Image (tube, rainbow, N blue to C red):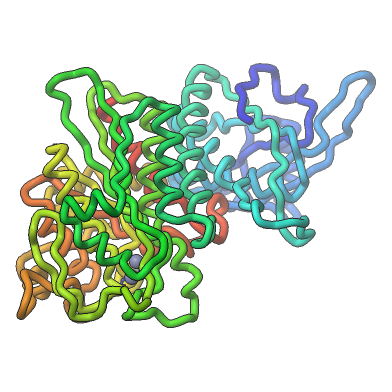
Length: 497
Ligand code: BES
Ligand code: ZN
Ligand code: ZN
């Protein structure tokens, strides 16, 4: 869909040409193009267009003068006066996308703003991400078009920049990152009846074939032999058997460190016997967004092929259902590695499936670093709202790197503490620990449960319950699943390319 255009934008013939302007402190918006500035000035003087972020000015130039043809539409997008950052360009890209969809444009040219002091490759990357994510729709199960809904018709986006080399490099990175987020959205949008634990295994098989990853899928029987009582317990009320999906990317180096990624792949969370209330329960098909983010990150790993890092991805995939065979409150299970857990609340199931995956992955692959990602606690929404992912870690350096990667990717994180006082809240009378504390500090207590299974390994935990969907809507992030996590992982592993 994207290409770099080197010809002068004035001569562009297509459905739309897009320029950006900043909101100047005094004297109206600015543009380097005189003809456009005159139009902007007129709109500015009547008060219709001030260059504020997200404002748009659509103009219909003459499409033919003599033999010379011109573009059908000209769009000017305001970028406000806030300091430039990656997300400003991502949001600008999102506005390009919505405008293109509204006008049903198929072929557009986007002129990179030269007057903004910002790395041009990063600018092209963020714009590409914003446009790709902004035109994303999921219409697979619609049998007819809805006139009230926007549809993505965009086939060709040209990027015009005075530094085409940097722009091309950024465009490639942007395409890669955005396509990973779209893969997460695609999986998340699938309903619970059509995306089951087996679907995770099938998807991973496709990745393994395409990128020559090693794939191991543990079946229910394998899990029984290994003693993975957490994931077995959670899924014992379901007719869809659980899967533990393991993908390995290995470099040839001997002393290469290993990164372990673990994502919660709960394909539907009813709460089990501790049944959730019906209102909004349909959203619990999104309880697999962590697993989706991990597989999408592996797709990017397959493309990027880091030279100095081995990566293992594990998705414990299961469905949490009530039923005659389901776990009951008070049941005691034995996690991988032997720890016993009193399951006081069957709705705190994510930690049970993650614990097996973490303990197994750490024992088997001896990673230097482990990062897990999960829609783990409703409490993170109380703490951070839908604006930031919860970050918990036993390692300051890792926490700082993850926070930086999240910020740059437009997936901001916020760190919460861990500590003995929280771990103590999981004390059980009859087993090694309970799976829930009281209501207080729910996100920290959930993470503290996981911490019991990572030992001394540097570990980061991303609680995306507030950000995986219902995310603060942005121009490039419409209603529905956001695809969060994948871009943060991609940014995080750049260090080892
Ligand atoms: N999948 C949910 C967490 C969740 C809740 C995600 C709301 C997104 C929105 C998780 O399995 C869960 O139910 N957690 C419980 C834990 C509690 C019982 C300690 C919760 O948050 O209520
Ligand atoms: Zn639950
Ligand atoms: Zn859950």
